Image 1 (tube, rainbow, N blue to C red):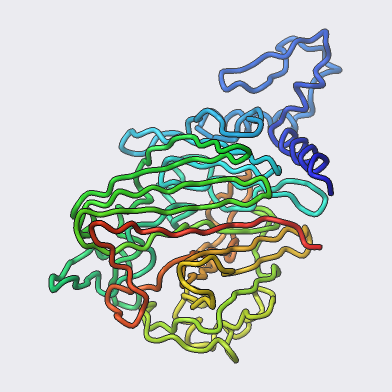
Image 2 (image 1 turned 135 degrees about the vertical axis):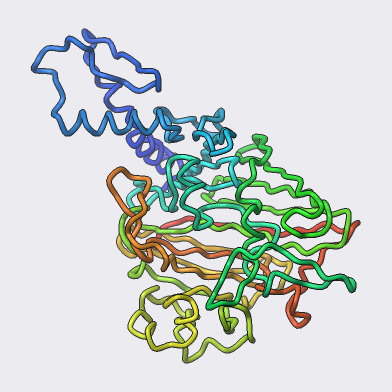
Length: 439
């Protein structure tokens, strides 16, 4: 399809989802009225024949209530580029979180928050050009703060688990926060309970020709969550014209430390709140995965002949019948929570995973310079948490996280690629999320 036609279809789809249609078709004799949130409301004395059905009025009121609550799902498109920030509501300590919309030239639309550097929404086209939000999340900062699940956030200083919350560097032992317990074995997970996902990042819009994006920066002080060294980190999000979300990580330190940042978005290519992802197809470019005991690495092992063999595309739920009997799936609370050892050369861009929703035709390719990728299947979601769409819940397996990373517990494993960063060095990592449609 030609680019201009695709972009027009995508723009029309987003405009519809933003509720602009009612404003554009309002009769000339009855001027549109705006409420405090900027949404159109019916005139107070409209003729009876023009009154909207009760179910439509209810949906409009729900949308206005969500906006008043800090929902960044605004009433108008931003056009290509980066929008002005909008409120996402306040956290318990009174800090206000904000959200920026980045719209690419190819039609991909993403909402990012300074609260944890989160991806809040990701609108991707299907085979007909229709946009749907394909990442899990919530509408307000308060919901992210209350519900957890590392939903859509930047992870640091160290993605995944560090055994017993301890590691030794240059002969000195460091004790970290213990915020995860698996069968009585406590560990440090994702940097601790006050990791980078809880921080308000400094955000600056980015424009490089046809490329729009954001630069997020944060200074992690020496001793934060027990980690040594003051680390200055910059994460750059770019939305490319070919519907690619590009993520660049850079970090420096003033003392020897360990670092392993990642992104923890959950994907459902049928659209968030559409159900589970078990029928969607996945391929992982790895011949080995990391066996675990109490979710701490034991050894790397071949995927062949196991439920971890995604070397060819297959349904994510193909191994569901094996889950209760497979020792490694039982380690992950009955599903996937494991690192995959990627085939590509570390430091060079290579494929990590490919995902497809057969019904919509949407595809997602994950490419990275990292040596590993954690697959987590959202098995702890139980249908009680709200989705972004009003009235919907997040069931078990509602999405899948594909976290590009160095391996778990690397600071305690000299046989794994090192995560040590020293003064004078710059940590760099690059990951791309390439959206498309099946041919």
